[in-house]
Image 1 (cartoon, one colour):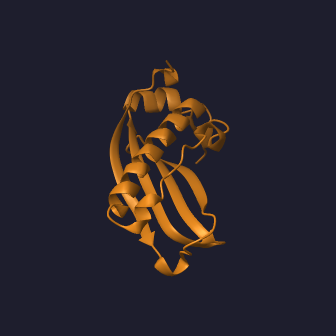
Image 2 (tube, rainbow, N blue to C red):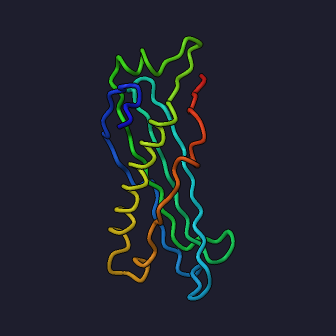
Length: 145
């Protein structure tokens, strides 16, 4: 079991930032490419880490036909935020293991959002595959202000 430095946190919000189906960009045949983006943010005042993941399915290069971006908010216990994440130089650090955990939770939530938004449509056949999240977060994340 990974402890993530015993950091106390809670998933406090989930939001669909964007969702779009662009019928004109969807070819009926051909290979489907999935473009994936992962970003992190920090709200110092609220002791909150945000994790955004964006997925774009495309069959024509640079012309997505299905787009989904989901944001998850993780509130960090105030004392942990100040004592474990805040560094001596004033920067804030999210340990790689914790960042991967946040990303896994966000991507899993995005799977559910994608299914709910496309249920009953031909686009429901497009699923988010398993993703090697560790390769998307190669190191600790450091925010410098």
